[in-house]
Image (cartoon, rainbow, N blue to C red):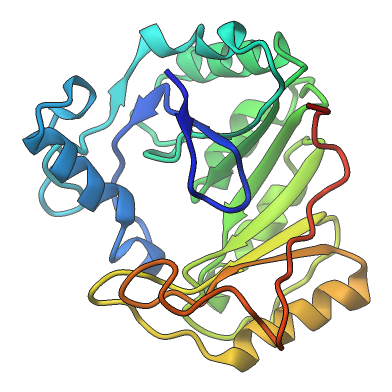
Length: 249
């Protein structure tokens, strides 16, 4: 079943995989890990598999949901779909054959536009480098600190209709940011009771680099105790630029 999303840069989430493991600083206060524990306690059948407590948690063990594969084929109206908001499709525990099935479903439903975001671009490159990627598939990487800008170079080697960056939670400046080959950048601050603050100059520098490179820029939130606590205005306005290749509704 599709979930109508409160995430500002998408419309629907589709989770054929749930669960993950922390791999970098942006995972420290993972919203999905917290949500999975709550869903497990509520008895949600998709979140009964526990992960390694050192890197994951209750209800957040990597779990494959074969019954979810056909869901997009039942959606008649076009949608902008964030794939695996509760996981990482390229997690090493997700079988390569299942990843191929997910891409086949996306290719077979060109009325939808799919957004695939990963912190594991090297596996994505290995699996996708020689694959013909459908024009309705976007692929992005998370870049929360400057030490992770190396993920961008790997992303450039992955075929995709749109390549994008999610700089959320933005935990520091990105002085080595190179936007060559990138189409879209999302910036956002962290939210939750232990949210780490984002400085305005970090966000405005990325915005200015996007403007200079003619890369579309989306400012998602300042963050705070709740996602909407700090609002969405940067320099007195919202920034909602999106790539032009979204499927028509």
